[in-house]
Image (cartoon, rainbow, N blue to C red; front, side):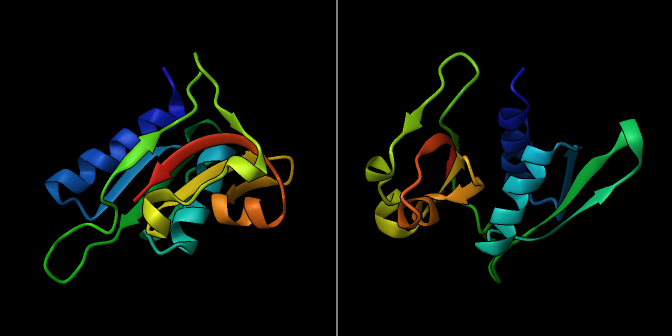
Length: 129
């Protein structure tokens, strides 16, 4: 199973039922994605818990005053069976600039906007709006 898709599905399901937090197994890639989500204000916070094999990430989800979630939709783009790579010139804004694209570049995980500014292409991990 794809661990990134599993993480996105856990977040999507937790927000659908209104849970304040969600947890999933830790990896550097997932922590990097959560750091971008926090920077883009899509989640309240995240933290690493546990030691060694039992490490996990606990994410505090963000909701509006009326109870709507900050994340409208999560979409996995590049999958283990079909990797999607884009040049910097092909990294277009998500939802006319209202969404975020996460790209794995030689300089690490970046948003689509940052990767385009630095003229870096890479693997498109997911889109969020």
